[in-house]
Image (tube, rainbow, N blue to C red; front, top):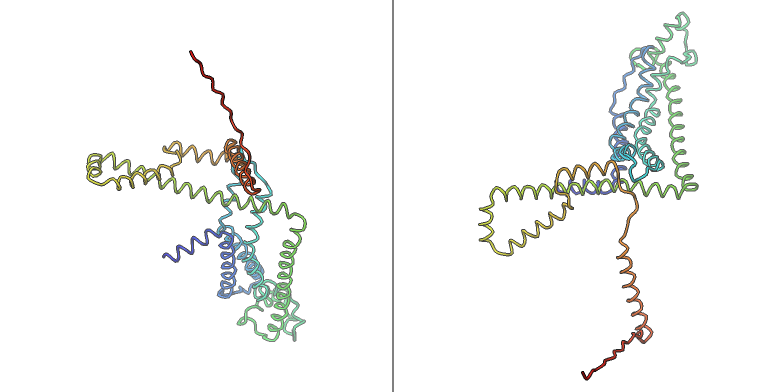
Length: 351
């Protein structure tokens, strides 16, 4: 359990590595699911096209939505999009960057599913077998006396090995459609790879400064949310601890005073230090209404992104640094700065 907990904490601290790992697992899961999936074409003209195209489209949509569900940044994006403006303005470029980042990771598993499906060719064969010209694949004399409806039903049985009697025509038609399907698969892979190359190669050439800005503030929003959650957890833990201690002190006041009288001073000192640390972690919020108000204000009016520093501290630090530099320069040159001498005049009276 300890090793698992350490691994989980490491993945939480490295959000980008964690999401890349999830995307890789989803991609492997999509390939494994397709290999374990039992393809069963209905071999009926009314359902072949729906089944074949549905197998090519519906699982990628499911994987795409699953990628959004497993990505923790979706909630961050939704909160940043729907929050009131307050003292902090919203930047559409940051929201766009976060959405594009989530979308890119979610597209990996669907793209792999579509590629594997096209390379295999079964769904393509099931969907488009009724569009074949059977006369191009061998002796088709048995088709001459059939009507159009019978021909379509015969072509719909090509994906099913047990239902189509003429195996030579079936093998030739299957190879023809699978060849087209694999060509579409390679074209799809080439398009996806070329698009990814263009995104990575062209984007830094035009909008590098804007990209760095949006990347920085998107990371800031994620880190701010994590630190706010951690601070709330620490406050809740300290609040519960102080509340329980006060409850026990009120109930067993006499017994606790007797116990303190018998114990030594070091124990009392340790208890006082623990209480002080818990009191410090409360950060001045000691009531339920105050905490509810704080959380409401954090949601409705987040503070502006402009850190302030006390002016007096800056002036004092500058004066102190100036004196230190003057002293250092004086000793480095072999002499010290001359200090102003004060003259005193003393007058005595004989009265």
